[in-house]
Image (cartoon, rainbow, N blue to C red; front, side, top):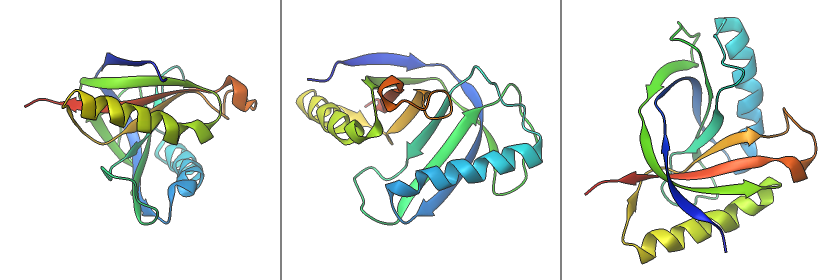
Length: 154
């Protein structure tokens, strides 16, 4: 069983790229695209900050996925489109920390969904925070991902 906890994510400023993509497997392509946009915008990336992906569709979709990748920046900046600079507010989330490769994310998300249903909670769009990923360590066994679901009040 996945360890699920309530956690507060602090407010941060991010550079983000949001697109409809063919499927979840396209996330890597968005990361490649955002890297070049960050460089051309001279975005002040916080190298010790958060990086993640938000899955804006509330339910699983096999195609036409509304996906956004983002990285924390040290201050607001003027981005080159389609890159955006925006503030993400402090959020209370349900969080499960995944150690290992991304093939386990669907299983972790199902465990969190079960927890949400059992507790009658309302949640927003799932997002992942990639604490350790391919950019930091090529060994998938060393990857650390926080799978987060914002808790909606009311």
